Image 1 (cartoon, rainbow, N blue to C red):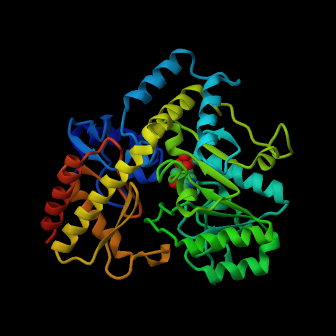
Image 2 (cartoon, protein in one colour; image 1 turned 60 degrees about the vertical axis):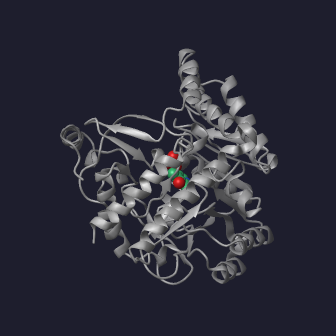
Length: 432
Ligand SMILES: *Cc1c(COP(=O)(O)O)cnc(C)c1O
């Protein structure tokens, strides 16, 4: 589908003013072709574009909107907070309330600090781990995204376990030099690295369930090996739960695996659609932060009252009724997964759907389900581009990149899921 005339006009204006007309690269539709569709307004599981067309949204602002767009409780919280002032740069009741919700819900968290984005949360957690351990090196897994800090924009060099090389221009080789890259799902390679270098490693960081390069769930054994080796060598295990925190249940991926990381990072859902990040862990570690300890980290808008209120309203809604909402998300996710698989099967395609709770990913390739970034077939992106466009024609908006996941929200319902499955059936048929 092509963008409508009003979207197109806005895009032309935007392109003159902002690189590729966007403020974050994937939004530009480069990987699926065509022009981006401008949102005009959104409510529940749907949005209306600048041309007045309605779509079922499966992006949900890339994860934050687990309750759907413009949830009444969140909008009311934002209105109430904003009417009392948009920023204080001083302590406020809203940040205490959100901190209580987060710390009282996640068993291994004793303290948190709020920042303004997931990127900032990860940067700060890594600095804290380095400060606590007095070590510089960190271990990262290929295919995991942890925001855009210099030393995390790294790609593997040659060989199995290698020091990273910058994956972006503008990143000095010296910034990447302390980041060790490993493939996911390779326990032996990880253990070997820790045996050889464990004493130099400040932190091992992994996405709770890697969801930024396809959805690549790891085995409990692999995750347990991370915990074991970190404990053995005095390295800190950081779970990046920016996507999975409060999406896979009250205690995120850590709860799913029954593993306690030393530090965890949050973002997306805990801001309820406002700019928020957070990191937390044990009291003894968190008290190493300034002004109590030597690790510096600060933020003008950190703990912003409007953002804190939006996050608190989101978490309160999620936690109501004993977490019934996550059971509902599981049910809706399962229904969508089965429906799409059914369509692929009916058309004799060997493609599959990978899912954890309300996070789904379309693996448009034959053979075993990918568990590492290296297992994703490059042709899948071309297939995804065609499918994406055919679905837009039918009013279904998926993320404009084959490597991005699909989010179901609590505002989706069975009828909308079934409508989506019917659209998939037509979209796939139209490609024959
Ligand atoms: C989105 C994301 C980040 C970065 O968060 P921003 O708010 O975009 O800076 C970090 N880690 C993971 C796992 C993410 O999905």
